[in-house]
Amino acid sequence: MDDRKEVLPLRIVAARFISADEQAGLIELDRIAADASRVIQIRYLLLCSALAATAFATMITLGPGIFLTLSETPGANTVVIIGLVCFVLTMAVFASWRVFQYGGMKASAPQTALYANADDPAARNLERLFSLLQRESTLRAFYRTTKGARRDIDHRYFFGKLRAAHVARDGTIRSALFGPVGFWFDRELFLDAEVLKLIADAKAEPSRVGAPRKYDYTDAVMSLIEHPDVRKIDIAKKRGNQKLVVGLLEDWYRNRRREVPGETQLSSYAKQILETIAKNRSS
Image (cartoon, rainbow, N blue to C red):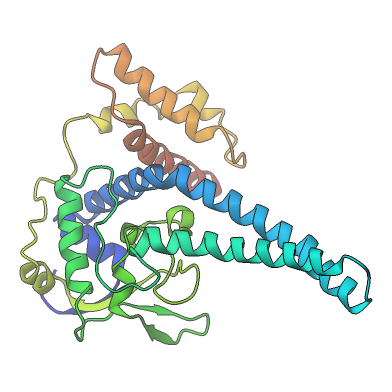
């Protein structure tokens, strides 16, 4: 790869910060994002539940209350007050998530990133990239509008605890992001930069050994090629397939009395296997 400017997805830049093998870096990013998602899962579900409850309560009280007030119905003021309280609670739910993410209502300083393991070398290299993006400098990440126009984003977008979501492959964890201004921000980001220069400036140390070799994924995956259960998979089925493949991989390791990889690692490979099956069957 030449040391020159490229317009790349931020996710690809992050993968190169993590590993000299881009594909290995992407796998590590998926692992980091999945682990971070699990850490916030309960908190985020509580947020969504509280938001739905307070918003629904606001809808069924404030609107009718205003109507009853205009109709001069006795007791209408009480209904309006209840509706206003519910509306305030709805705003409080939004505020609590913003405070959790940015340490306050405004993104005034970088917060400690939320990782399952902050000492993970891959997470540390990712943080070196974010430390560059947090600077108020000429380096700006951007997104594309539906019409293709470029929109630069402020450096404060990388101040939040959930900044790892910016490099997640899907919207599962990105949907939890708040921007420094406004509500949810789940756009895919890009960089126009010299990646090798950025890595040198950040003093990052990408892994140069490729994908982790602790587990023999190649043999495990190859063993599933002609497996009867894999051949019977209905690729149009949205549920159960990934769990089935993960189970088959786990069985492969156990039958050979080898250490079984973590669920996150197996799920990543299972997803790739299913994507490959889908492509092969459609061709």
